[in-house]
Length: 190
Image 1 (cartoon, rainbow, N blue to C red):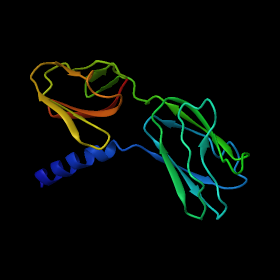
Image 2: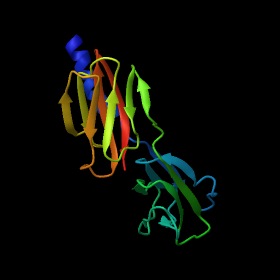
Image 3: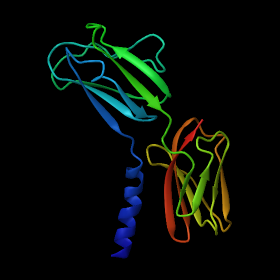
Image 4: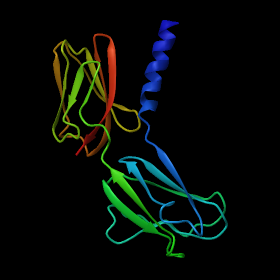
């Protein structure tokens, strides 16, 4: 039974790191307030058509990110975009320019984390992520957004470093184990 619970906890770990999908019902008469939101870096916005009227989702000049959907019509149709650049992205419908909104992407809301007496810093990181504990760190693993393990190391020291300079910019997940306690956290590689 313990092995089964351990396996379930391990398999659920990557699921806990899944990014959020935000849904905007995209229709004639939508207000800018209804079509605007603040999200975390790596989140997805899904625009859902609630009528058969054709619409687009197109970024405005000066947007942090750029994208443009084709003309889409049909109740239940949708368009999705994953946001990866911090900043404001105003958008509109090219067919109905009064349909506007702004997606504001904030940096991950995970500053340096301290839990289970483990410390992780800096976050965001450019070159080297440091993990420290009052006693030895037993194992560290790093995963990409898809849950694929990219790196793993065992150690017996109270401090460990992950050299991230060769990894592309993006969001990663780190799992560190110390004295039987596991801490999972998001890290942003700049």
